[in-house]
Amino acid sequence: MAHGRDKERSRRNRQRIREYLMAEWDPIGVEGIPEAQDEYDTYVARLYVMLMDENASPTEMAEYLHHIESDHMGLGNQAGREEVCRQIGENLFDMRALFAAANLP
Image (tube, rainbow, N blue to C red):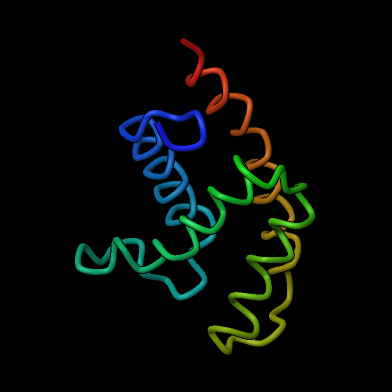
């Protein structure tokens, strides 16, 4: 177990985040492209660490996602995207309790 979590459970939790980001965040519109299903995996990994190891706040996760899309991806500050990222940050934060409960013996 890494950091008190079973690897298989950690994989499943990251898969949940991956699916959630693809469905709700997807700033470059690749949700329906099978070859692109791993497009956001780097961000999934970072968010999982933020969520489970760093106890990041919803705001911190939202700011991370907004930075990725606006600066790293070069999409700029598009109207309404900060709100999308804010909602995703809150929903990810809510997943922490589910993930933590799943890690109980």
